[in-house]
Image 1 (cartoon, rainbow, N blue to C red):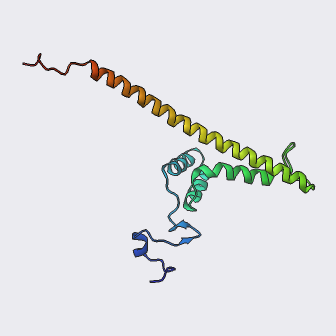
Image 2: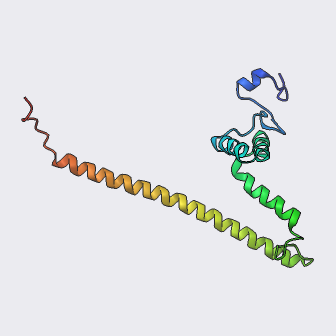
Image 3: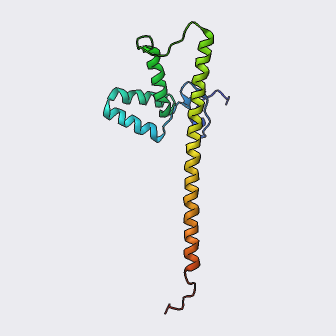
Length: 148
């Protein structure tokens, strides 16, 4: 069997080719995607179909809002007053892009710091609980002389 053959046996062993449908054409069926799809069908059925298509294509639902925002800006950037549009000055466009990249990096750094802080808080609570447990165990008599 060649590496480009795609059969049921390959799928069952977890060997797939990365075709246009992503991982074996199965999509990205995470819990968040399924919840978003169900809510989309409940709120507005076309939205549910969009999320279903997005999931089948193998994308996580977290990427959808940015994609929608980008498409919206592409469609309506010339019609909306105050929207950012490229100028005919390439130097300014490069400057603007570096600023956008910098903002994106800052957002990523903030997310990393928030996760590190959550981890720190979890560890601090665990240390406090451990200390409290150790104090309890130290003060509790180990002698079971009261037992019948």
